[in-house]
Image 1 (cartoon, rainbow, N blue to C red):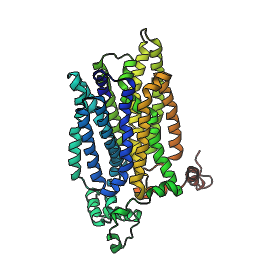
Image 2 (cartoon, rainbow, N blue to C red; image 1 turned 60 degrees about the vertical axis):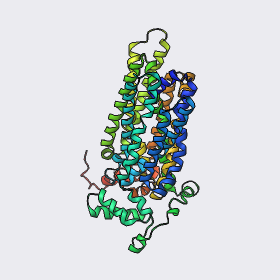
Image 3 (cartoon, rainbow, N blue to C red; image 1 turned 90 degrees about the horizontal axis):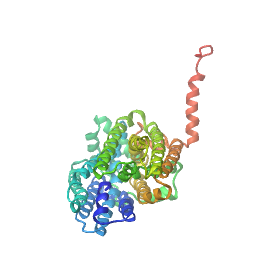
Image 4 (cartoon, one colour; image 1 turned 30 degrees about the vertical axis):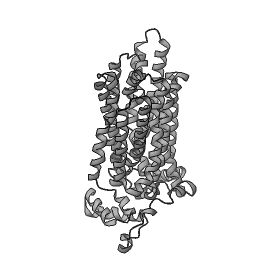
Length: 472
C-alpha cells in the first residue's frame, strides 16, 4: 500500500484525509475479524480458521485490484482488513499450540518474518509495477495479493490441526497422533498430551479422557473469566498480553513503514524511483533482523531481546527526530548533508531495532502466556487492541506531523517507547523454555514477589559459603 498510495493519489486525485483513511481503514475493519476469530477458531478449529482468513484476503485483493473508483478501493481494503484480523490472531496461536517449549519462541515469530518477507516482496513489486501505465500500476500492486491468498487457503489443509484444540474437543487420540508427528519421541508426545489434558480439565482416566466435549461448550464463559471474575494470575496475564499489543504501535513502526516514502522525501530523496528503491532497503532490513530475532529468542529469552530492542528504538527515534527537524528548518535552502544522512540512516536503525525484538516478540509473548481455555479469545482481544493502535497511528500520522512537525512526531514516539520499556520491565516475566501449561504459574506471583525471590536466590548461595572461605 505504501507504494500504491503514491500512484493512487495521482490517479484518483485523493487528498491527505482520504489517504489516511485508506491506510488506516484496514486496521479498523481488522477489529471485526480479530474479535470474532477467537470464537470461530474454537468452533471450527485453528487450521480452517487460517483457510477462512486467506479466503477473505483473496476477496479483498480482488476488489482492490479491480476497483474503478475510491469507494470500491476502500471497500476492498475493508474486506482485506477482516482477513488481517483473522490471520493476526490465528497464526501465532496455531504456531504456539503446535510447537514444543524449546522452539516455541522461534516458531511463533515465524508469522512476523513471513509478514516482513511479504512486505519486502511488496516493495520490490512496487518498484517494478510502477513502470506500468498509471491506471494499471497500483491496481496490479494490490490485486496480485490474491495469488498467495489462494495458495494459503488450499495449502493449509495439508497441515496438522492444533493438538490442544483437538483435546478441547475430546478428540484425544487424534491429538496424540498429531503430537507424535511434531515431537521427537513417542514418550515426549505422551508427556505433552498428559500436560494438555490437565490444562484442559480432562481427567487422565481413559474413559473420561475419550469422552468428547460438546463443541458448543468450547469457549463459553471465557469473557466472564477474563473481564468479570479474573483470578490474580489471569489478571496479570491480561495486563502483560494486552499491554505489549498496546505499546507495539506507539513506537511509531506503522508511521515509518507506511509513510517511509514521505519520510525519505522529507529527507531529500526526490524522485519516485529513488523513494521506492529506499523502501526496498527498509523491507530488507526488517526481514534480516526479524530472522536474527528468530535465531536468538529461544537462546537468550524474550526479555533481553525486547528491552534491548526498545533501547535501540528510543535512540533511533530521537536521532530521526533531530535529523528531520534540521532538514525541515533548512527548507527551502539546501539541507545539511549530515542531517539528511542521519535521517535516512536512523530509519534503517529504527527498523532494525524494532524487528529484532518488539516486532516478533509481541506476537510470540502474547500468544504463549494465555491459559489454554482463554488462549483463542484472549488472543482475539489482544489483536483488536493491536489493530486499534495501528489504525490510530496510521490514520493520524499525517495530521500529527503537520501539527507538531515531522521531527516532533518522532520525538513523541521516542517518549512513548520509554514508557513501553518501563511497562515490560516491571510487568512481563520471562517465559523462555516453559511449557504452555506451566506459564500461568509464572504469573502466580506479582512483580515484588518475583524480585524478592530472585534476591533470595542470589543471597542463599553466598550464605552457604563456610566461614573463612569467602572469595575476595
